[in-house]
Image 1 (cartoon, helix red, strand yellow):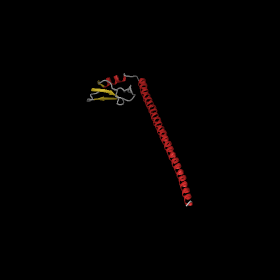
Image 2 (spheres, rainbow, N blue to C red; image 1 turned 120 degrees about the vertical axis):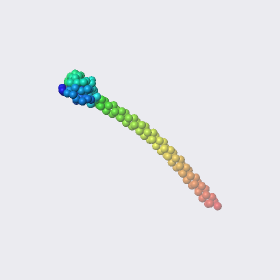
Image 3 (cartoon, rainbow, N blue to C red; image 1 turned 30 degrees about the horizontal axis):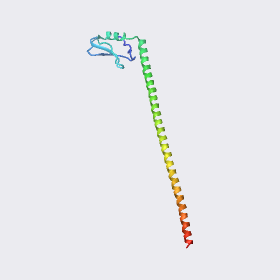
Image 4 (spheres, rainbow, N blue to C red; image 1 turned 60 degrees about the vertical axis):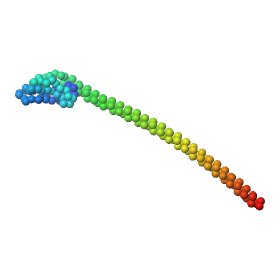
Length: 150
């Protein structure tokens, strides 16, 4: 039996699959398949015909190039996915930060408004208190004057 060349699609080692009892090198059905990527040759009656058909599919250098290209595409895809994911995460974080900044600005404005209300209430209270004291002093002075006049 000849040696099987690597899979022309992924570069993995293929497997000969048979589904009948061996009679020399003749089987009822045999097929070369790649268990890594699922590529398969035609069903043949003779293993040597199946191997020869598989081995004609691509020259070894093409196989190596295809396997290397596939690896590069996978890595490039992972890099692009990671880059895209990183950009999406960065955008989501920026959006979250902008929302938080807006919320903080709104809360700061509310705090400033409440401080102004408190300050206005203090001022009103202070004026009322001061006016009350002045009124009380005037009332006491009037009482004192009334008592002295008696």
